[in-house]
Image (cartoon, rainbow, N blue to C red; front, side, top):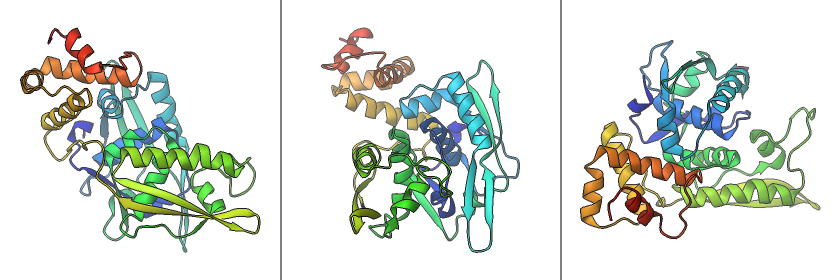
Length: 308
């Protein structure tokens, strides 16, 4: 099963995973979100999922070099999900294996079978969130908080959580107290974690969130997140459509971003596969700052390709 077979706008993830304690980099999360989007309920045990690196880069607008990807899949094999309920504690890695096919830009991923029920059995208890939304968030804390908020979007707010437990969920604090706490000062925690996440989520996703901190005595001890649905700024890629249609929709969005609105130009670009590839390449290079065009990026694209 390849990443081009993505067939749903939303990823659905069991709440046990949303609230599990684990640590991931932004690159690891993007790999996992891609993997989750490919999972289907009727997948057989041992199904191999094929992820095309180019597709991942086009969706995220970020470039992950070969070494970074290797490190990320290696970490995903060794890092644990810690899932606990009243009867048991499960310690499990997400990936059973990752195979890189040299020269083809393809990674074959195999999930751990112990984790499969939490990913696929979603009849009673799941969180849903938009694939493009999580890809659009660059902060790993924003990605994580978006997942948590998605779980409560129909209610409008999360329960009041202790800052201790919330930081454990974000892997900022070791529950055993053996590792030093990150962003221990509340000012740093607000600036680099909470406010960054709020800004990115509100700007890029279908959710609008805020938070409230509660004091006990002189110290902040608890937090509650407030969640509202909003119309996202960017048009979600319609993964339920055929791949060519999805890319066409994404190309239309890129043209709007570049403020290329002339109907004749839009028609010419969208009817030419070479120009569509060039458009994706141009947007990717802009996002990775390989091309800098602050004043009129649309004009630059048209000039480069002889369209004006």
